[in-house]
Length: 290
Image 1 (cartoon, rainbow, N blue to C red):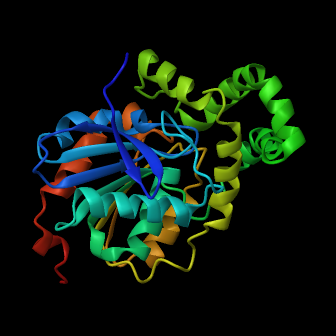
Image 2: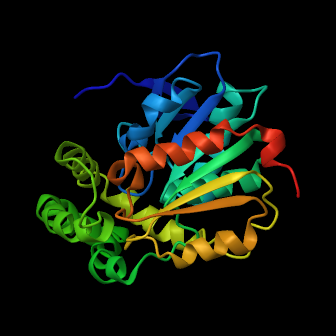
């Protein structure tokens, strides 16, 4: 299915954005994760768009957005999206929603530009940048090849075959055995993950997440935050949740059974209820100290 996209040019970089909702409402900016696209956050669009101007980005190098001139980094993505926020919502802070790597970008953005973010929602966010042992054993070797020129050439030549292999390796790492993800949604997620021509940015981001390790760096963030994890997540280790619990001043942690790395697809109703409950609370209550 083809969706209409808005194109923004920020600091010379084109960013494709899927938008829904009323233009004059508060902005909710949605940031996808590694090997993904705006579609990663699509299950929460219908409910969010009733109250917000929803803007789900294709990060540079993913989806329809062209790669940036410089190698991808977490601070680079964060600063670019901060400039986008300043363009589309110059007078009012936004709601920031990030999945997986998008959660790391969201935290980095909020740390660097706290005045731009009213509240934050994180879905299975990576905090340390160190993914599960499963990912390191089966996916990292291919990604390491993509990092180097000769390896990138080899991966490009055999990209369709490698994507076939990683496809079958990634499902048990990212989707719970008894999850509620539909086959149609899984096919789209799989298509995003195996999109040809994105090998280089996948490699850059894999290592950029390691370099973007946020442990010990979150103490200055006071933004009210909801973080949701699937209890069967075998992509981002649940130990990263402990970092949020220890370091974030105001975080509501929720764990969902029968969900892995994609709670918004696997348990959409419960995920939406948690999000709606968090967004329905007035800011003065979220910021209150008891």
